[in-house]
Length: 54
Image (cartoon, rainbow, N blue to C red; front, side, top):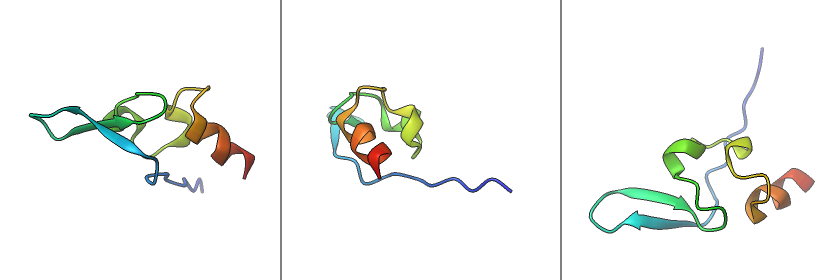
């Protein structure tokens, strides 16, 4: 059984002020694309790098 760990505590910023659409503050990937998974952040994302160390 595979157990996934979700990461949703990364700093976010609004992409479009007229829509409920956010992105990671560091790598600028949409929260919808990230979908709570660390590996969906860019490989050079500060948030991802810090959490991969843990």
